[in-house]
Length: 166
Image (cartoon, rainbow, N blue to C red; front, side, top):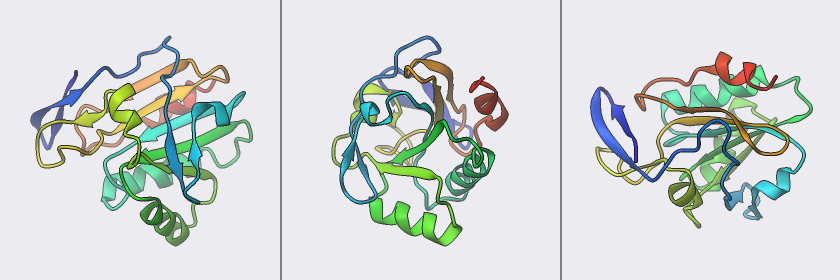
């Protein structure tokens, strides 16, 4: 459990957020075409893994667009974005914003991020959705950067995440 903030007000998350040096926990997410993916589907690839409350909020949209732009020239990196949004909403956003280098995924079916990543907010107006977080995984899917953003309305540290790619 961690304490983060929503507009300066403390809220709790459920579970433990992965830390640098940890092996990334297992996950099962629903992709844009409604198929399912696990970390094994990205074997041998570095992953910039962004978790956020909803793509239909300004900061979440900015987070997705900014990381997409910063990683646009990286061939050995998977940009993975996940939330509780339905795949249809994620597809609509990417199409409208011209984001074509990101894998968007929904956790609406399995809730594996709530169970294994410690990002489910248990209090406040966004209770039940996921906190804003960024993990960078090396090609062996070990965590090399971990940021559970201190206030859900703040952006992640893009530069620190990109630097962790080494």
